[in-house]
Length: 310
Ligand code: 13P
Ligand code: SF4
Image (cartoon, rainbow, N blue to C red):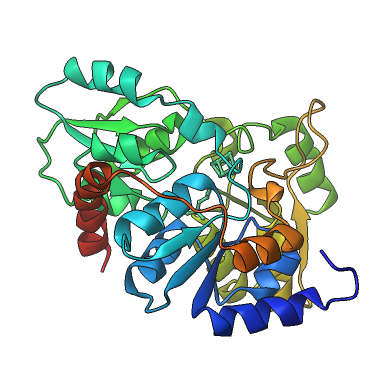
């Protein structure tokens, strides 16, 4: 990139010229969030992708999110600043193994968490996100048998909330499994007024301590509406940028990880940079594309989710 250019001004110019929209997840670096047309959680981002009239969608997030946008808007060009931005949770559920798993439970409805490949969505009946997983499960008759995957932590949380007995795939997110229960307890002793808020991808013993559990946008909303002045936040640290922007006088502390990890950053999400975003808009590469038959099969379960979540 020419070092003399104003990268933010150039991104704005290219966006207009190409009728492009930038959709960013809360876990993106702050500079990317600040230039996005829409920032949101996985549900909000898929709703935006479905209704945008832009010709090009630049997805500042990870691969499965860009795939979901492509499935919902197949005629649009969907760009991802770094094609290697994957997801450990999605990787924990290879579709060929899930297909075998599913064969063992022929009378079960399959609900998949959106953090999975398009191939996996194509094997499922309904998709869900962390903000509507409970609602999706509750939309089914009480005696309906259900497989839930790939996230066992979210699955456990939904089981507790709904009282349903779900068959769980044993997958997890590497970022949400690093929190140290002991260090969180120490921090809470240090900040006794602070509320502890957590994402449902965290493990059960972490969620058990939480004052609030919700998706990224749920957590953000909670910190805006709640009257505490300090929050310990157990999720990827990118969300703290929006929390601090929305409540400048409040204090937000990332929940401490175990000794093996230095921080709560998602290494996949953080592969995207402003420079890569500029390049991808300029060259219209890398593009996320999918075979039409996968788009067709994966669209139905996502559309079912969007209908239930309206
Ligand atoms: P939400 O933003 O939907 O809560 O998802 C969190 C996440 O881990 C996305 O990768
Ligand atoms: Fe995947 Fe976890 Fe990163 Fe989200 S935070 S993209 S679930 S690895």
